[in-house]
Amino acid sequence: MVSEPDLSVKIGSLVLKNPVMPASGTFGPEMAAFIDFNRLGAIVPKSITKAARPGNKIPRVCEVEGGMINSIGIQSKGVEAYIRHTLPVYTDFDVPLIASISGESVGEFAELAERLSKDSRVAALELNISCPNLRNNGRGRAHRG
Image (cartoon, rainbow, N blue to C red):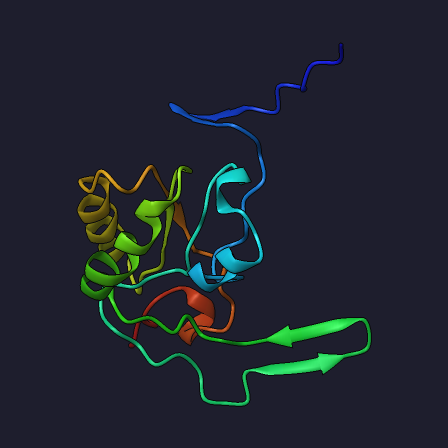
């Protein structure tokens, strides 16, 4: 008899049953009709910010040969809406939730990390520090003179 391979991975103190997790923002709870979330190693909802932000103006997506280019600009309803409305949706699934956070400053990242690390529904944090289509290339507010 052939046994199933052990695909578990450990990230710090978090153990995932396998390394498969969607990139933040690639799909939401509506995808549960097509994909069994419980087969994933973790789920990573769309990045959130401290305050609500509209994201970039449309058009945000451009199809190119062999793929697409997007510039969403981290549209977010803010952390309060995330805690009240997004986190409860994922409690029906038996996989860890990794919250993806983005901030305009180191201080905002710290505030979000502190706030979400206290929520038992959040197993880990992902810091979205590589979004190049934000003001000043995602480096926060530009210093002036």
